[in-house]
Length: 193
Image (cartoon, one colour):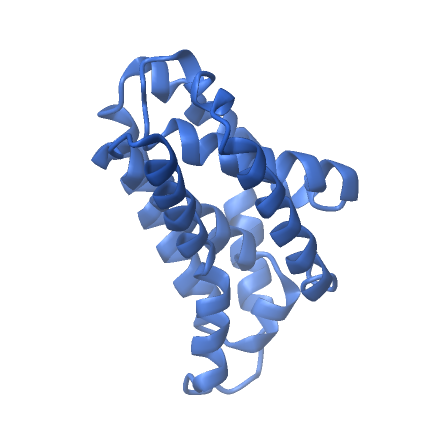
């Protein structure tokens, strides 16, 4: 039902409008939409340098493809995306679906003790459109989800849901940095969020 609602919104937003070739603004918008990949990679590098642990390939793939899926599908529902271009929502939906498949495949290769975090992260991602309307929830839940996912997935140390990694001293500064980034992004995206 949700997928049909996305398709209806994507097609009705452009009824009678000509297809416009992608300009530089569209590519900048895509960079903005997918920039969280850089943040996910950066958090992984910081955790690696702080703890000395090597990142697991499947955990890193699950983290980055999950980020790409979440942010692509979230932007499919934004009014500004629907009004920008006829092909952009379809591209975001395709990238979101493909990255969801890659994420699921990587999850199947993770240890069970690490993979148990995936349903919680997926539930948070699916409820994000409703949760982001609540400033306090978004201010606390989003940074915690980011740091928890970035600590547990690439650095699966055998603790259930990565709780052991959340006790590392580097987690608190990372949590504060992600919270600051969330607040700054909210100021810029207030209309869409």
